Image (cartoon, rainbow, N blue to C red):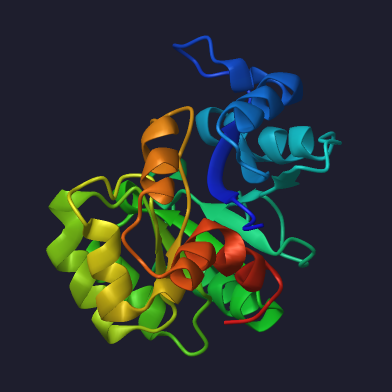
Length: 235
């Protein structure tokens, strides 16, 4: 049976909405409802508050279907020097006020690449030029661009063409055959199932996963195989 891994999910309360995923019990119930086996979760406190508080809250996550994803901030006012230990991390440079091209960021990216850690990077947190600079570094960490959507497709295609270290999630690839086009041109191994829920819809990407017009092996990679491979340290 194909494993379904949501690589892009939020645990915890949201500032302006009452969501089921405000706690572990509610989030696991949502996973059951949508037939999702595992979710890689950041804590909402790490996005809407202090990342250090969110990462600390993640340390209390106990359910085996929830995989904690710390949010990192480089520099002396950041989350602390990176010492490894997490196969997947998330970065929010615009929201947290740091530069992707700054010296502390470059050091962090090199450390993440050396550790084999995969990065989740929301499209609305960076420019295409910043992504290009990040992916052009040597070494460059494997980076999953999340929340791209149809308005970003031209820039996204150019970046995927230029950099093998870049991947994309399905959270907002909801246009007609967008996932099939990317998988056909760049390989199904470059696409990961992700919902961005509860900030964005989860039922749409989950339905899309069931209706992909792709060979079963490719669909299985997108559903969970790619996420499990990347979190295991393989490219």
